[in-house]
Amino acid sequence: MHLSSYEDLRSKLVSRVISCEDVVRYYLERIDRHQEDNIYISVFHEQALERARALDSKLNTGESLGKLFGLPMAIKDNIAMKGGRLTCASKILEHYESVYDATAVIRLEAEDAIFLGKTNMDEFAMGSSNENSAFGNVPNPFDKKRVPGGSSGGSAAAVANGLAMVALGSDTGGSVRQPAGFCDIVGLKPTYGRISRYGLVAFASSFDQIGVLSKNCNDAALVLEVMAGKDGHDATSSYHPVTDYSAEMSSISVEGLKIGVPKEYFPESLNSDVSRIVKGKLNSLRDQGAELVEIHLPDSEYAIAAYYILVTAEASSNLARFDGARYGYRSAHAEDLSAMYINSRTEGFGREVKRRIMLGTYVLSAGYYDTYYKKAQQVRRVFQDRYREALEKVDVIAGPTSPFPPFGIGEKTTNPLEMYLADVFTVPASIVGMPAISVPLGFDSMNLPVGMHLICNFFEEGKLLGIAKHMQHHD
Ligand code: GLN
Image (cartoon, rainbow, N blue to C red; front, side, top):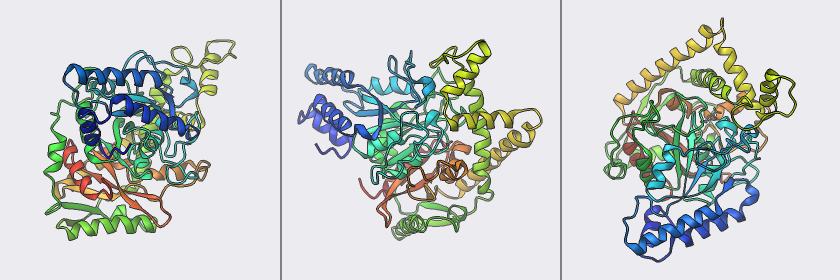
């Protein structure tokens, strides 16, 4: 079954060339065949088929069809779906079942999407390689010895391997964009507040956004449009009107486009293949009439430091709720209440999560708060001003998604600082809250995917997707 896009799938469904049930069977079969790749943590075999049959009957009764009628989707396992497991790829939530649906899930369901299952990830979305999962590694779809990126590694691998047409991920510092770049697909992180975070398990609340992973920009636009918009359950969701992203996309042309190219995004240390491919694409856009504008984003080297101070601070507070009393895992070995808390957390959390809780507690503690946390907040503000100023002069800021191609499984696990550098180009958009996307450019000399990273101004998702579409190496 070749399905190039949701539009293609929809026309085949509506003209009854195939049924929703055929589609779901096809995907479930593929999922089962890829079982050893650990891409899904839960698969909804029966529910998905049941739902497909219900949707098929809509065609017969002539009921109106939702905007995402029959779209087979995967959901990252830190997004709540009522009655299903919500593990966050952590031992501490291994058997936890969600008691409600995330707003994003409700909105997708209302437009007739079909959910195939929940995908693997780095524990609590902390990581860049999917290696911090209590449910095992996920191999890169193009080289099994390498990582798919993270933390939404399962979602990226699901889309790249054709185990879902579109997947949801979450992006705090790059977790949708970086794995998309590593897996030759599109990964969109919307403006902070564009999609409700209700039902997304919090890592760093002032950074977290649900994002979309898909084969192409059109599918991302459709799914974003359905999920976006104000939600009474999330006070940080925005009232900014949701526009017709697909229409906006098609109005974007390369001619006259001002592409900001920051020197800081092409450091000496950048992998030479990545640099060559990204610059090659920029030059070809210039040949088609775009203007490449050299811009400066000074102090970019502080992004990673500021990010890891701020997100660990927020994580240490957010993860305090997992104490053995209210959710999930409780240690069997505890003489008193505080031993129960300590042992449950010690046994339930993985190494990276513990590292971040400790780091976050440290930067928030009396005596260090001003030196670290407050300073990082000030850096965040400086970044916001700089990116805003830059985007007054250009339409979009472009650079590589990752400084290197997908790395080997185990290559960076012993050096967390090295792992943190995987996000050096994705973290700034998260610090400032602007929408950003990774778009696939093709393959390097080792046949590994390379992604271009683009940032637009707040709430310019339609424009961002439209620009990205001109850069994608395949449809
Ligand atoms: N890799 C980054 C981190 O470990 C980003 C994670 C994310 O976006 N959830 O924090």
